[in-house]
Image (tube, rainbow, N blue to C red):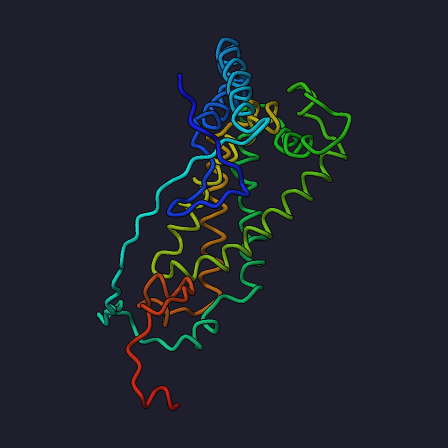
Length: 286
């Protein structure tokens, strides 16, 4: 088979562009790596196929660049491009002309989020403790289950051990419960102004359902023991109670009536030229 003469970098190429020769070996190499990694959760035969593709494509790719890199000369096609300017108008979104400088004033104070977090954190203990009393006849089961996740040297306790008082688990559970409820309460104070018409729907139903589902999936990886021993129906009920109480307390701690008619983009603080009205020369002079 006739092999075309290879050109060197110091030669002059007129009317052509000197480019590296195209090759499919990098794609096959990436496919081999993907199959090799995917075999960790699939099958050993997938890993064997990935290893085979990895070796073959690596050898093929190295032969493309060693000992000399292969190149091709691509002919240049000259084309005259005429650029015609266009002055088409830009459509703008019609929104309420609420002065943006007033929007930061229409937010809940930080104290509202703290009060909501404390109130919700206290009330959510009621359904959790009711579950512990009905199922395990102990007030300490839920406390130990939450606190035992962070206490060293107490791995995989039995249900009988969880029904007795344990000082380390009690302190840890209070720290986790207090910090989490305060942070979520502050988050409610920042998010509820975005949904001023039905804040209870966001704080009491949407948010608790979302983070309950997220925790159910994450704990299966981080702490399988905790994920298996949590009763998720009672956990979801306590989260909904927390969300309803915290959302109610936060929403009653401030007045956001001016934002009720503002579009969602304005409430989120989105900066976009399309959200502003057309400016005149008089506005520019101001």
